[in-house]
Length: 86
Figure 1 (tube, rainbow, N blue to C red):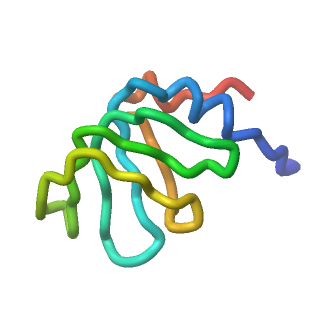
Figure 2: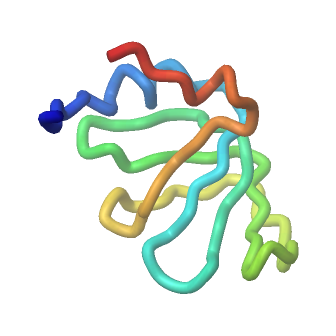
């Protein structure tokens, strides 16, 4: 079984205007919100963002920009959103 890399850009573009969960690299910090945009560096902009630490909501933030090097993973809130054709 060999590893075949998959380009993540089509998945991210398909999630624009959808509800997503973004996990940061450190701690147990997640942001939940609607994905507004993704740039060529994969920085992400969320609207209606809420911050969760250890699965507990800590605050509602509204509009946020998350720099790409802070992101561990991104997933759609529904299973349908995260399916990739490969």
